[in-house]
Length: 434
Ligand code: ADP
Ligand code: ASP
Ligand code: MG
Image (cartoon, rainbow, N blue to C red):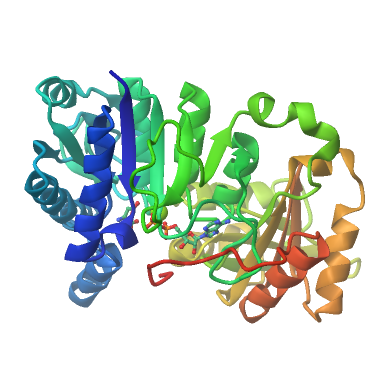
């Protein structure tokens, strides 16, 4: 028997009609003869609304209680979808993350999966049931408390279950037709990519292309899970998941690309991220140990720093500035931690800017081609966009710009690398983009 894992995101289950549309797709996969495990997200913007609600009660909810609250969103979807599938004449059973055997560490809000023990899922499948699992959640091994995997984490639930169950395919259903060369919400001329390598998808996802959670791509690569992104709104319900075309397949480099290395596009896609903030440590003595003091304090506060830039020191003072970016949600803890070492590390002040955005150009082809930075920087210059920070990896160049310039910058880079499609193919079927 073949096994297909299907994940439906929030906009795919936004209301009763959407839940029924998803149920028809699930029933079609079942009728095509597959065992089906479905992972669901919370309906529409429920997770954001629950976070807002908690914010009206307290500015600092305990991680345990916030996770308890947020996991309720996915439980609503799983039960409604089980009812809708049952209405179509199939047996369906829903499970919370902990019932499904998703065991995590105890890091509330960003728990990592340590084990998947899907015994109850196997039993239900063997009994002929469609299995529906609440995404984004698990149970901590040590404390047995309910945990969440981080925003967008239902994708990771799906791939982790697909790996543990040895699924033939994991399908991520969302509100766009697949992975595009840029976010279809801001670049209408973006092109659908029929396939993208794990390596490139990881960079895109880690730098803001939220169509896939980056940890799900890591999982898929590590365990060899066949992964496909497609729209739940498309008119292809009858297509067999295993043989159907369309959407984007996430492939290993060897499978997808080496034969065509000469023809590889230089750039695969462009990601953007509005969720970061920039902090500058001003006037820090330019001597051994200064950067260590700053980043040790940040690490102690659990802050994940992304880009770092240190200026050349001013000759007159022997001091320099260090700027870095981090998730905007961590800025307050970072500033508090840095104030704690202000005296001992001798810096003069701190500046905080949350009006920044990051643009990242990603492409395995850039390894063999110098001049990608020149093309990007010229395109930004012609658009009048000032670059605040730059960082690179082997297959990526990222720049930080003013947030108001971000969309224009993404559009300019998309055009400069020849990614624009002639016909508009980037349709957004649902969701609010929140
Ligand atoms: P879901 O609720 O289905 O998990 P998400 O909102 O998490 O959906 O992800 C889908 C969204 O990702 C799209 O609506 C789109 O705006 C955004 N997105 C960003 N970059 C890309 C990209 N390169 N290709 C496709 N979608 C992208
Ligand atoms: N509902 C969660 C979120 O909005 C998880 C997910 O959708 O993947 O982040
Ligand atoms: Mg998502």
